[in-house]
Image 1 (cartoon, one colour):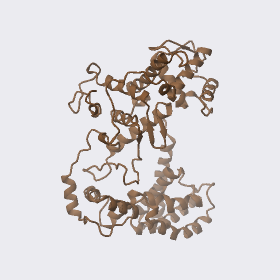
Image 2 (cartoon, rainbow, N blue to C red):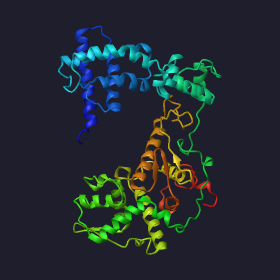
Image 3 (cartoon, one colour):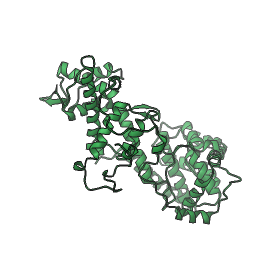
Image 4 (tube, rainbow, N blue to C red):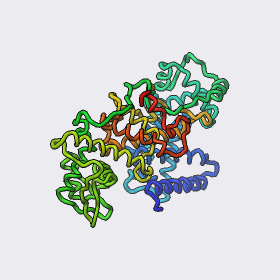
Length: 474
């Protein structure tokens, strides 16, 4: 498998750091090389990941200033003495880059580097000491380090986080905002906190931690929700509108398709223009607004490709425009939305399927409530936002729980991109039309003829979160 650009730069960074260590020891065999390489590894990684500047040899005054006074304070928990060492270490690294020919030509001149760093030294320390420059987590963890907690010790970190979680809300806010808490209502004692953390093995439970608790929502009716009613909820759904536009184009033109089975560039641009979307397109597969409904129409039998051309078929429910027959249009809308969800559920995640099942079902149920779903960032600095659970065995953020969040977030964004959901910032909203299709998917997943023998919680639902039980009649 070909190496990605990110992997190439990561390997380049590792090579440069290794060479720097050798270069540094050659000049001074007593130099604290391990500490310097650790500092440089952190700086180069942050420069690549947060400043989109992966080249270890490219340095401008703007890059260095932002890195040392903005990116590092909000990202790195470190003692003050290490913050004091950052600028001198970076200065030696600049010298190494110049002497070894690795200084990038698009950087500032080599002679400007030392003077620029001298001017940054005070600003770097000032930023490191300013809690408003730091993030929620760096303030909280920095306070723990000040209390003597070894953040590399899993048990100590678990104990500290257990103590933090016992604080009243106002004290947690104060600590996350300022990095200080002079008179906590619960005094911190490392040994007792570690003992409490070991004893506290709270289960996260089947309901995803990043969603509002089931009893906090507006309530859902998960019983029979037959398609019908308001035609406009289908006419207003972007996914249905895009599927309609594709079917009309195919019926009128019988267009040629590419070798990968996609519409050509001109037809894709015409559809995007008709839908009021930006028309820049190299291949239809890069535009989920078209690729999503196109795949569903092929899966569902509304389209067929033969001899290099796309042809319209009847499908399980024929397409009928709303103005011709509203009731039959609703039937088509329900069928195409249901086919989209079923198709994604049937595919592997690598092939465009859902990544976060069964948690995605729970998220969709919440999004289909009247108020929608606000999916806070996983590492949100908002103290009222759900926080990533701590793994009691390590005292660090639970990676599996973080992975649950990332998978569901990706699923929701995908559904918004193809038009099934609406997205406004971090808020996802699904209409009644989406809810009807979702209930069909839940019922299909609950069909014992379609399930394997896995049922983790023994309730006969094949391992789904306890979402259907929110309505006793479901």
